[in-house]
Amino acid sequence: MSDALATNRPFGTEPEDLLRMACQVAETGAAVPDEVTEAARGLSSGLVQTAPARLRGAVQSLLMSQHPGLGLQCLHRTGALDIVLPELAATVDFSQEAGRRHKDVWEHTKQVVLQSAADPIVRWSALLHDIGKVPTRVMHANGKVTFHRHAEVGAKMFDKVSRRFDFERGARGDIRFLIYNHLRANAYSPGWTDAAVRRFDKEMGNRLQWLVQLSLADVTSRRPGRKQEAAFNVEQLMSRILQIRELDAQIPPLPPGLGNAIMEAFKLPPSRQIGELRALCEKAVEDGVLEERRDADYYVAYLISQGFAAPPVNVASESPFMCAPDEPHGHE
Image 1 (cartoon, rainbow, N blue to C red):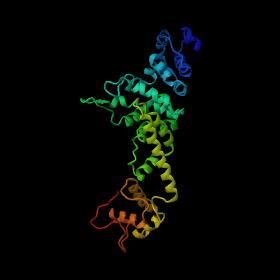
Image 2 (image 1 turned 180 degrees about the horizontal axis):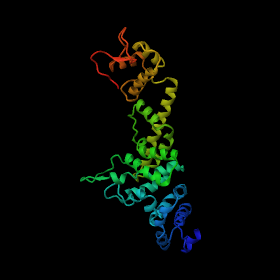
Image 3 (image 1 turned 30 degrees about the horizontal axis):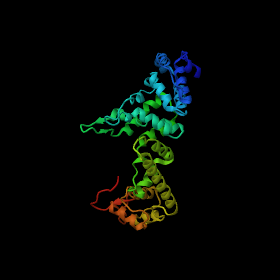
Image 4 (image 1 turned 120 degrees about the vertical axis):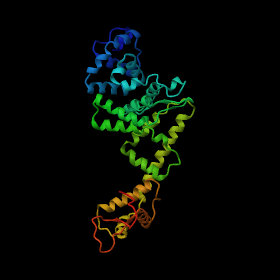
């Protein structure tokens, strides 16, 4: 392959030879002569017949190589990108800011892939994280460009991509999740409450480290210090997450005796409803409605304020709790 690139000899006659050439470029950084590129373009349409697993393997090999951006550019120049990833091909020369060519989504994407951690899940997520910008771009009269909900749209677009490449279920869910949430970590500010940080940590779950790696890679600004600022911001978020985890392990946000206090206040036997009422308090803490680490009476008072009350004496009811007269239900 390397000799073929160097001497302009044909690189092969099968569509998959085109993928192998792109992988070779990604591995070695070799330049592809124009005549070789033109010859390859004639094979690109045949890639529609490539088995999904082989297609996925070739692109993943390219992504995990030393020069993924060059390999991706090779796919674009040979027309292969239009066949295997038209969603990504649409980002070529697609501007993110009016009048600023270096802000084109394609160039940004290649840089993010290069900067991202050498992990297949992170690299695939980096490759596809901004595909939702194409259908969501709005160019305003004042020159401002917006991409509202592009992360959500991109995640939905990935559903079609995942079927084309036949991703296994776990990887499919991980990549979709990272595309959907790729803006979350970089949105952190010191003003986030502990409850907000805790909620973020809980929602990210075991994908948190991948998301942090993607977030750090997703800063390609040329403004001096911007990368350092973004990295520091994410580091601060991770520091707070670890601090809150440690504190929660020592002193939980809700008092240990809350379940018993709920049973006593509402005259309830041990049942699933105790957990449901406790969960209402937990959600109110997460949402910042209630303070954390208060006495049990504080949370019981909240439940009463929401309309929950102990059943009247000698009145049978199928419900383990009921609203006081003339008061609406606070929760369904």
